[in-house]
Image 1 (tube, rainbow, N blue to C red):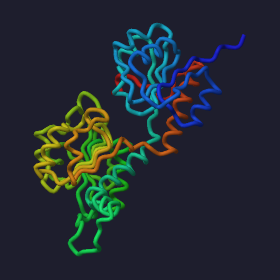
Image 2 (cartoon, rainbow, N blue to C red):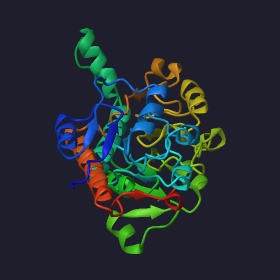
Image 3 (cartoon, rainbow, N blue to C red):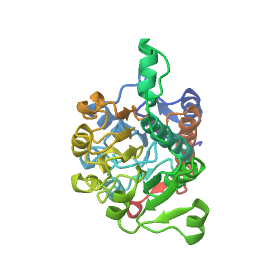
Image 4 (spheres, helix red, strand yellow):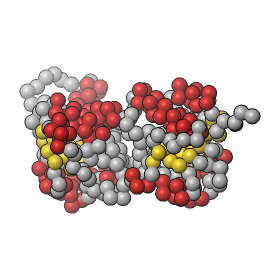
Amino acid sequence: MPREPLSVVVTRRLPEQVEARLGELFDVRLRSDDAPMSREELVLAAKSADVLVPTITDTIDSTLLAQAGDRLKLIANYGAGVDHIDVATARQRGILVSNTPGVLTDDTADMTMALLLAVIRRIPEGLAVMQTGEWSGWAPTAFLGGRVGGRRLGILGMGRIGQAVARRAAAFGMQVHYHNRKRLRPETEEALGATYWESLDQMVSRMDVISINCPSTPSTFHLLNARRLKLLKPSAVLVNTSRGEVIDEAALTRMLRAGEIAGAGLDVYEHGSEGNPALRELPNVVLLPHMGSATVEGRVEMGEKVIINIKTFEDGHRPPDLVVPSML
């Protein structure tokens, strides 16, 4: 007898072609609207599915996993980051976790450069004047930003995305520096033209721009805390397209308001979508609604990885993007 297809529950709306392919391959239950599942809905989904496909907006903690029952065998996360999933508890309960790494590298690096340019060249201020019709004509001293070329860029986290940022920054004439858990191989450093700093404190204090490109882990929580933020030059700019928890957002807000940091470009926030309201009032801050991965191509490729992970698991093999606690 043919084997019954896996029961798959998807917690959020995905690109149409991804949902169509999931429907062809599996017994899938899709979301009818794009609102996040409530806690109760998420528990019911975990109880009724062989495979759960959550996103960053779903908290899959030990309490939820304890209520999942015995049916759930794979959490095929739609996204690269898994800090919203208790991977260790899942594995203890015999539940595998997979993710979608690698497909968003270029998209996120592009957004990093977009935020960097937007802050340094004061693009949102110029846009606002044009949209309100208040522009009175060109003036020699109006909207003076800074030159990007020649600035020192310090990249915190030199994985795939960090290296992609380094390549783009070099094309803009920036000097590339980095801090990472492990130093890159000499040939990689040479290819990127990147200078390694073993001391994060020393790197932070000497850079014109800091780009956050490291994952959220217990060791990176508030890595840029109030003390370390104080080391930044008053002319420095901070860009974060990684995870909001890496920065002490309250301390950053205070320093931006006081003029102790020149500006910031943020796509992620410490408390999810609820960035500090005081940040919205500052002209030297550019805020985006977590758009780093928001390209059609990237979101479709994420879905394709989810499908491959589920199909490989269904065929009795290890999902290619399996996440294990030792990786975190």
